[in-house]
Length: 24
Image (tube, rainbow, N blue to C red; front, side, top):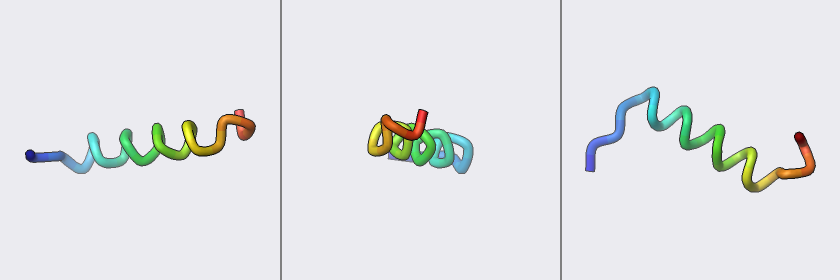
């Protein structure tokens, strides 16, 4: 599968928000 830089950044942000739900 091909993942663009933008998609990769968004996925990383989403992963962070999911792993740290208390941050929000």
